[in-house]
Image (cartoon, rainbow, N blue to C red; front, side, top):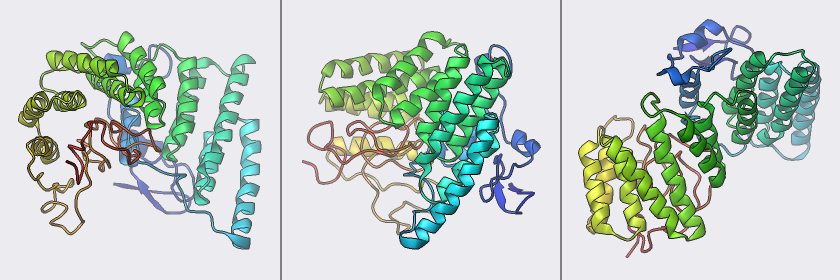
Length: 402
């Protein structure tokens, strides 16, 4: 279902809060209809306005995003490239003129998130999305000032800050989203649901230590008995441990990942991603026999063609056989190769089906990521890895290995 903008009649996604074309607000009732209910009591804020984390995560997925538990597809300064010469200068001049007026609006009323959305829209048009971040900071500073001056209560500030974060996410700005969510956490430290979002963002931005910090805070506070996210976050933290092993060449991080994943498969033996990633741990440790055993277990738990392909591919590569053809992630017709879309890239696809990664390695529990991340273990949130050699030694996953 598409929403029609009341201002310009452009068609928008059913969960769009603002028009993609002109930035005008779209009816709130249409947005609410697209948001699912929270999955557990832990998803509810302890007091004050409720932030619908599940609905926000759904928004990110439908925007090509993997999450706060799923996060946005890689966007390098999302928006049209800036044209050069006199024409480019003229366009930028018009953008700056409009942004100047929006800046005054935000300075006057930092709760005016519509103005912030319009700033993002303008900078997207010229491929300069990073320039919008100073207006995110301007909004957050203004919100804090209003709190200090008793003009804005904390509960209202929390709700507005969530809107600021959403504006950044809709624009594909991971840095801006992190700025807003760190401020959100400062205002509402008892809302543990923001922590995995921050962890995912940190890793997508190449901040592995920060990702481990946020994931650890969540795991220390969340209840595995009631949290639907607990075990996925533990898988994520183990993936960060493997990234640390690649970054530091310190095998103790690989051992941490193994312990973490073994705890997951003991508590939740039905989790495909945990077994699959445990296979990757044993590849790090150069134990192909044990790795094959883990991938074979993952294969028995595969619930779709993509998961099945992932496990079969790893097993085939360990056995020195030709990997199977990559299936079409959308399910129409045969494999990607059979559809004439070229050979499959080496690597493991997103098990949720929103795009594919670009290197061999860990199972992606969340979706696609923001910018480039350090080489090594694949981004569990999606794209953005360099072309470094396989962390497993003689390339067992990619093309042309020994």
